[in-house]
Amino acid sequence: MKYNFDEIVERRNTESSKWDNVGARVGNPDALPMWVADTDFRCPQPVVDAVKARAEHMIYGYPYVTPEFRTATVNWVKKRHGWEMDPDWVMFATGIVPVFNTMVQAFTEPGDEVIIQRPVYHPFGFAVEDNDRVISDSSLVYRDGQYTIDFEDLERRASSPKAKLFFLCNPHNPVGRVWTPEELRRIADICLKHHVLVISDEIHSDLILFGHRHIPVASLDERYRMNTVTCYAPSKTFNIAGLRGSGIVVPNPEIRKKLEQQFKRNRSIQQNVFAVPAYVAAYEQCEDYLEQLLLYLESNVDFLDEFLRTKMPKIKLVRPEATYLMWLDCSETGMSGDSLANFFIHESKVAVSRGDGFGPEGAEFVRLNIGCPRATLEKGLGQILEQYRKRF
Ligand SMILES: Cc1ncc(COP(=O)(O)O)c(C=O)c1O
Image (cartoon, rainbow, N blue to C red; front, side, top):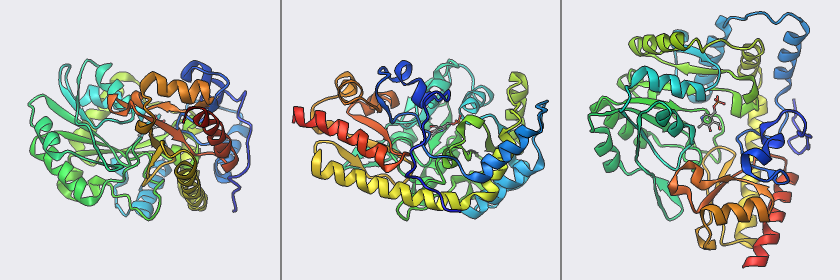
């Protein structure tokens, strides 16, 4: 089926967090929403059909997770990322973010250290601090427009006796890196050596751009597999985050048992009736949607890059290897933190995500969501340009 990603779909008054809650969450109800990570594209037709079929049954009693949920996950990951998993390793969860908390509770004690790599997806840090654990921030290194890992710093932090967990974001939100096999091996070796469990959040792993290749860290070696929990979901790929379904892959039976026990303690595993039918339809029937989406996103990235280079050269795109979340380096504007947020959100009326929300390393950056029709992107960039010209 051919999808039309140029179509503008009205999202106001649909209980959309991005569109209807932009005032409360970003601070300006009139700003064009380009912040939270969902897209403005309709999801694939087979998902709509699956949800409709379920809705029309008109009984919404307690559901259970069918075996198809596991096989759909296993088949998708094998096809897209070449990793052969056992269906028994896959656990259902109502989204990945709630599981961050469950994992911190299951695998660490209060006061333990959890390593993250800022600037990074902020709920990693929330899960640590809300559970009275301690963030150990091995900041990424930003040089010549590229992000890399300071492996000496990572090893120093992992060698702390209190370090128990490492949250890896692959691909990385917001900096857009797809970690290479060499980088992944070094991370995994350090974590093995110091008995630090790796949580690999691979929610963006389908959204790989410009010929890069996603590698699940757990697929690289049997030893890594036994020391890794990998998180997948069709939610970003197919724009179904509101249906709340994700697959948590835990090959090590002891680790799986610990996680299951924590889920049980929290009684936090029950899904809604639409989650599994939508999840299975997405992974089993919608690869054509993804292929078309990737081409559309690449053309949006190129458009954005060209626009910035030619019209707003003080704002630089950190070239993404994945995702529709663009990390904009605004250091040459002389603005940061509140002044930068004010420029985008209040003066330009474009609701971006503040860079410092991902850690202090992001103070001179903003994150712009380009998972939208080209016309929306052009509108947002036009508004920013108008204000840019007044200043520079
Ligand atoms: C890295 C990362 N992990 C997890 C999530 C959200 O997970 P979920 O909606 O399944 O809770 C996001 C959403 O932006 C994300 O970027």
